[in-house]
Length: 345
Image 1 (tube, rainbow, N blue to C red):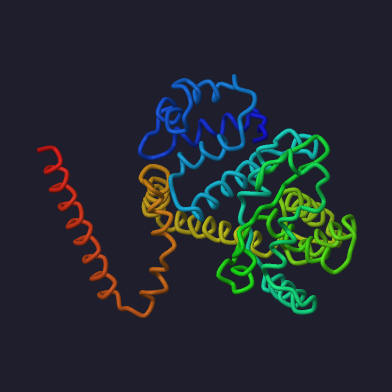
Image 2 (spheres, rainbow, N blue to C red):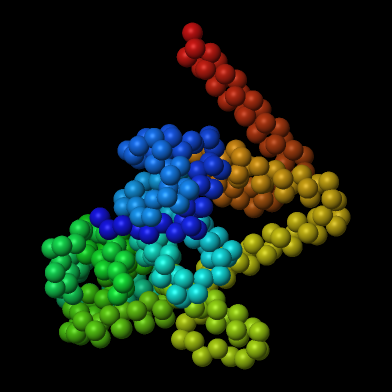
């Protein structure tokens, strides 16, 4: 597999994520978990390892996260977004951060707009092709002259760009069409749309151009496009002029930003009214997410819309819910204590 260049930023992120995980994960233990020498991770975090294999890169974060595929994808997406928010990358600097290409193109999951699904369905009907026919076309990798030297489903970041040889399973396109899969990575969707245009008779260059334009139009953006869209939006806001960009920051990105702003506004308002309560809320959330988030249980817990579910309940009923919840927690902890005692006997 190809190597990923370890930049100082990437080394710092690995150290930070390993150090913050609960329960604590030592550099020695992580090294063993990924099949490396005892000092591999500590050497990596000091910046003394300049390149790591793509497989090792993914294993490191998988061991740190230790969750489901969807949780792992969201986890790396958050790391990527945080890096972009705190570090101002130029286009030249982004080329050096090749690890971001791996997250951006392969690991980062993007919501599939219904218009994309409709296009795939309509195109297959017009071409009188099945999802299996499309899958077979994708796996032919017709754009490769020397595909035998590349491994399947592996991203290669080259000086001239990047390369990827597909060998996707037969049910991927079917699950997207039936909406069983509602998000996927950029590289897979690009391969699907690109090969549809090939099936329609377009040449390689034209099919590639039309596929990228189609994904932009339907808000299916890779990292470079997100950065460009955000930059142009910022320039537009600063100059109060209309942007001439052909694509904008996708709706789901803007909604996420708005939600963060709304949370911040609420906490600020609560602070003005009751500083002790506001401090308690923000510290509890911080501790829950960063100190007591073993197996990322809290991430899942926070997705439960308690406010909406209990909205029609009276104050007394809500208090009863809390009392029962605390009783349940007490019961579970007592059972855990008994089981732990038996294990030590």
